[in-house]
Structure formats: C-alpha cells, structure tokens
Image 1 (cartoon, helix red, strand yellow):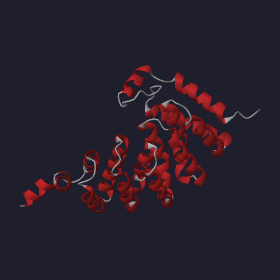
Image 2 (cartoon, one colour; image 1 turned 45 degrees about the vertical axis):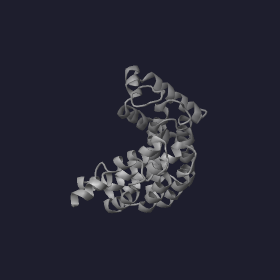
Image 3 (cartoon, one colour; image 1 turned 180 degrees about the horizontal axis):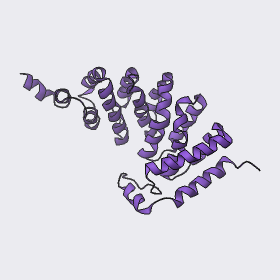
Image 4 (cartoon, helix red, strand yellow; image 1 turned 90 degrees about the vertical axis):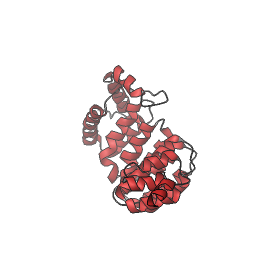
Length: 248
C-alpha cells in the first residue's frame, strides 16, 4: 500500500477537528481574544487525548520524522486547534529534539496569529528545548530585536521553563533590558510573565533586577512581575516613595 503523505494525514486530522468541535464553546473562546479568531471550539483536555492517540499511531507506523512532517503541515493552518494539535503531537518529544527541529519551531513563530498559538508553541516546545540544552537561550537576544511581535514575546516566554529550574538569570536580565521600551501589550505581558516567574523561583536576583528597572519599566510589566512577591517587596517596587516614608 502506498504511504499516505504527511499533508494527507494533516488534512484528515483537520476533518476530525472540524467534525468534533463545539460551536457554543467556540463562541465562549472568542471572549479571550480582542481580535477575531478561527476556532473549532475544542476543550484542551479533549484535544490532548485525540492528539495522544494520533501520536501513538503515527510514531508506531511511520516514525518521528513523519510525525514532525504532519505537525509542520498542521501548523500552517489558520485554525487555533490545528496549531494546538501540531504542538500536542510533539510535546513529549520536544526535550529530545535536535537543532534542525529547533530551527523549524523558530520558523513557526512567523506563522503565529495570536497569543494562544504563540504560548502553545513557545511554552510547550521551544521552552523545554532550551531547558534541555541551555545554550539555545542565546537566540533570545536576536528575537528581542525582531520586528515580529511574536518573536519578541518569545524572547521572554521561552526562558520561563529554565527560570523555574534556576537557570537563565543573565538571559532574563538581557531580554528585560532589550524589551523594556516595547510598546506592544502582548510583549509587555510576556515580559511580565517571565519576571513574575523569576520572582517566584529566583527571588533575590529578580528583586535586584526589578529595583533597577522600577522607574522605567511599563506599569503592566512591573505589576505583573510583583504579583507573587511579599507585600513589603511589592510596596518597595510599586510605591517606592510611600515605602520610604513608612520606614521613616
């Protein structure tokens, strides 16, 4: 029997996603986005179960290169669940992928259309690959200087997995300095997320960094970064004049 192409399998998966979606849930999903998004209305847990079944079959019958090719076809789609399926097909493999795969996933950033597609790709695939091989984090400086807002957001979000393991303090400081003047809210939210995780897992270094940027950082970035800090640290960072007065 002739081997079906990855494009054929991807098209089959698209039909499964279309037939199994929920119109009411698609309407509910829209409220999380300012822009209009194309969605089939799948819940994450159900999509993940279907992805795991496809992954097992495709790996058993055709191997990892074929699975990657199917995912690459899916991430070319315009539907959120198609890109989410691509990510879920590869999630378990990400820490073991090599440089060719890392370059491919980096190219997928050009196909991202909203924060959900971005965060699935970066937090589930690219982040674990940086954690598995920390020198990959060096590319975040170039991403932070990109004209593509999703690459700039990726410069911050991709470091989060490593930050939670005590890594990337220097990269966090560098990316913060490069993104500090960014006016895009998606980028500011990504940077705030990174700094919040740094404050949770590397508090001393994070507070020192936040003290250095507190007068120039966008308020959104600073407030997000301080969410999990103790009240005294939050006051020192968000209301420095009041904190100084309280100390007398």
